[in-house]
Image (cartoon, rainbow, N blue to C red; front, side, top):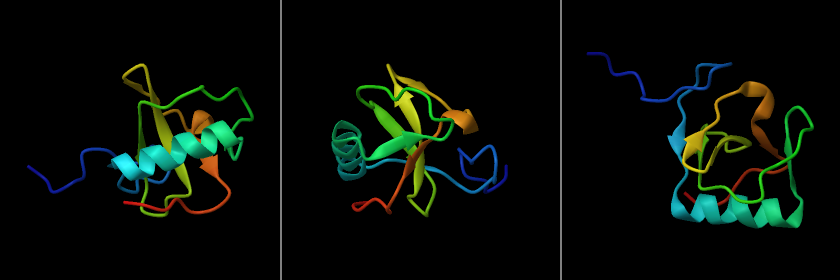
Length: 85
């Protein structure tokens, strides 16, 4: 066995963590306020069930309807670092 994290960013290979309750609340608040964008400019989901975040907390890979989306062009980007943790 290795000590590799269970999830890594498919582009940078940086470790990802599952968003805490407070991080998820902040993401959903920002989503409703129109403060987030998808990397490719596509349509955002109306609500996130979860998200995977790098340590920078400047973007996330969404979980919608219990399905994680690790496509780099569909990741959700933040203008400022998420609070919480």
